[in-house]
Image (cartoon, rainbow, N blue to C red; front, top):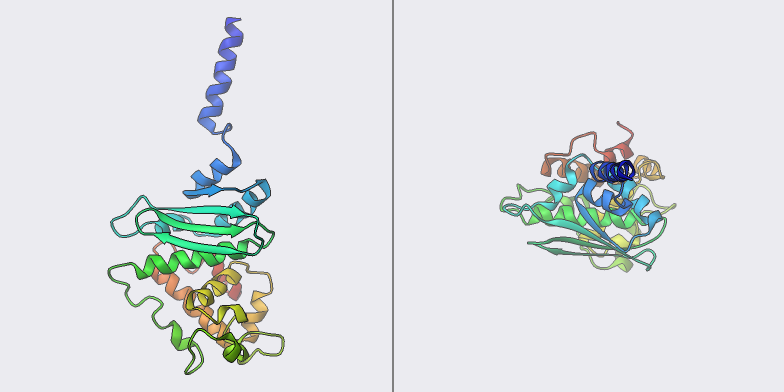
Length: 232
C-alpha cells in the first residue's frame, strides 16, 4: 500500500510540475497572458491559432500602458455570430466580446487593432503614430456616410478607386483600420490579390503596418500581417 501511495503522489506531482492537469483554456491564458470566458474547445483552437500568429511578446506590450503593467486582455465569447464589441479600461485592460463562429478570427483582428489604437493614443507622446491615416483617404472624405462614399469601397467592379475593404468600414476610422488589420491577419485568404489589384488599399495597408512596427518594440518586418504583401 505504501508503494502504491508513493506512486500516486509521484504522478500527481508530475501533473502539477508539467501542467498536464491544466485545462486547454488555462494553458492558452497563461501562454498569451489573456483571460477567456465562454469558449468551447473549437473556439479555443481558433483563439490559440490566432494569438500564435502574433509576434512574441507583442500581447504583453500591447496590454501595458505607461506606468501600468498589470493590464490584461479579457476575451468573452457569446453566440451572436459575426458580432464583436470592444471597450477599454485604462487601469484594468481591454475587453473583447466576440461571437463564436468559424470566421471569428475577423473579430479578433478588429479588436486587436482597437487595442493598438488605444495603446498608442493614450501615450504621453504618441510620436505622430497613425496621425497621417486620413491623408490616405479620398480628398475631402469624412467618415460617417457609407451611402455617399460607397463608391470608394472595394468590389469586383472597383479596384483602382477602392480605398476601403468594405462598405461597413466607411463609417468610422477605427472600423476602417480594424478591417484592414483583420484581413491582413488572414494572409492567404484572397487578401494578396486585393492588394495587387487595388493600389490605394495597398498604400493604406503598408502605412498601417509601418506605423504598428514603429509603435511596438516587439514588431518587425517579419510580423505575420506583413506576409499578405508576399514579401516574406
